[in-house]
Image 1 (cartoon, rainbow, N blue to C red):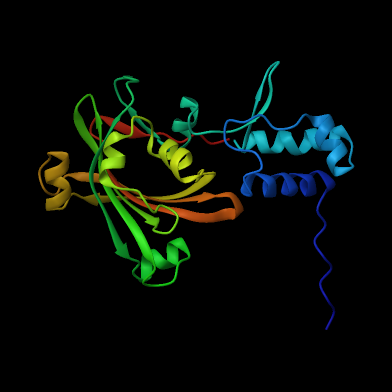
Image 2 (image 1 turned 60 degrees about the vertical axis):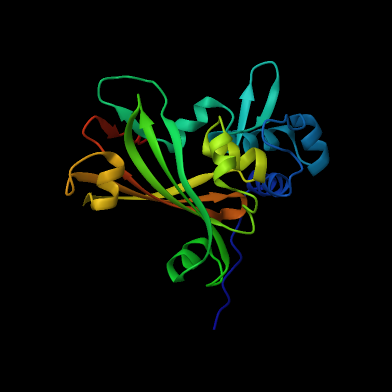
Length: 242
């Protein structure tokens, strides 16, 4: 039987992969400037044009951020613009006031079959589960249930969540060294059960948008499984296609 030929990878993609390995290993931290194109070209023994092409692709994927006159920086969740990459719920009246996160519960558990499958863990491995509300102008709009690998997020407690003034992903990045790179979502329509209806202050059976998300860090490693219920009577889910 004929052997398959190895997949060709352009040189700039090879440089990109090497830079990704540096990010994954913590060589350059979120918010830090990376070496100049000339320094990277010398390090990898390639042309500056090849490095520039690798950086351009990483910037397009929101892994790096170019700042005019300052250099190229590792993207960070501390940048307010990054929040809208993952939070797609917008007010129908145009109110741009950001939501407030209201932590409800945080507890340790053992991963069941589904959580283990989604997070690539062994069944029974420790996980941390978070329940919270997102409120807009004091009104509850989203109830989230979030599953996290327990070993990665050891030390995450309800008190830590309550004391956090930044976004949840900023907290994950700053205190646990975990940056979310990309996410996959599945959406469907559901009816509010008794628990979600009480939290969202709507009648049981009210139509809700169910958003299931798996978020990944470097190396395409899943590190968050989130199941959210969205009240869309005053908000819509926005997605930009290009």
